Length: 166
Length: 264
Image 1 (tube, rainbow over the protein chains, first blue to last red):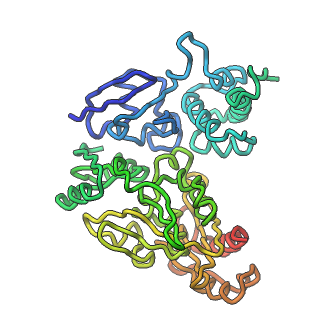
Image 2 (spheres, chains in turn purple, green):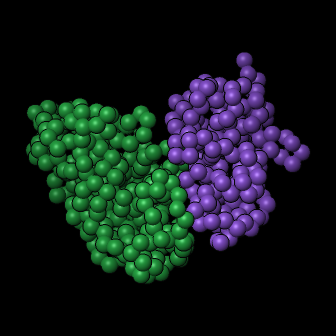
Image 3 (cartoon, rainbow over the protein chains, first blue to last red):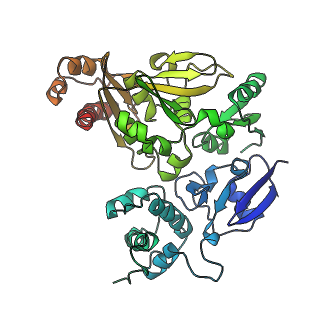
């Protein structure tokens, strides 16, 4: 069986997989990192989004072996060791950017990639466009967009702390 | 999906060797189409040859009056490349509308072109810009490369290495996306090139095609009024649950005007 060596959330793992094992299957079933969800399994819903070498990808449409040597970050790897949430996680909480929560890990991972790639800032329209690969079936997009906008200010150093939700 | 053997060569020569020795081996680039197809068991390759480890397949460079894009360059890289944004901004803008963010981070220009999905974006640009396809063994013109739905001139064991896009005077693109699949219902790429105006259409027919009546009209008069008299025939266009051939024919006319406005 192929072996794959990846660094997940800063920790190196060498895992035996089948060539056909998806990255999301390896993360959930072998590394027990079940924060990454499988929604549609057809690369549409975005519940499985993780970062591979800093870029958001759908882990249901990537083979584990394709991630050989990569740095993978999942939702479990965002908070600091002392439990301090990432500004994007904190913003999702403050702005109540979730209802059932199923899409949330993927939303947060996509949102971080979106904000990091746009240091000049994002309009509401650009945030909505940037989330085109993530589906929230509670249709809770409104607060998600607000949360991302607020988190972007903190991530880009424009505010030290999150603006409180109105 | 069925299991397969997995190879990750580091050179084009090694990849071609594996693919030549086994007719049932398949190359995988971004995998954005191939992996969903394998999940549905539509395909059963004996092995996948991952092109992700081949550095010579990536990157964008200028060669004379053309921009050469490596086959493994991702849509995101095409969309954000400074050279492409300056030389062929319509191609960069097109790349920024392929699929969604995560698809653009993994999917590649070469993978999309070699797959030749009738609704994919790049084939219209390649045809309109008069691109040349560079493989491990030869150079192929865009018209010869695309041979109908999901079919190209690539021989078994032949690998697309790069695509050379001549820099146009002006170019523009517009499409109507299917709101669910994000694929083009009809997309039109218009390029004003040294050899005249060329118009490529995707999404509407069973494969990419040139709209020669629009080319003639725009070559004579580069303005929106020139398109007023040109009708797209619905004959041989796609008719399915997403839209009739007549609807798509109308979309081609509308998208052509938008593409022209995009070209400026």
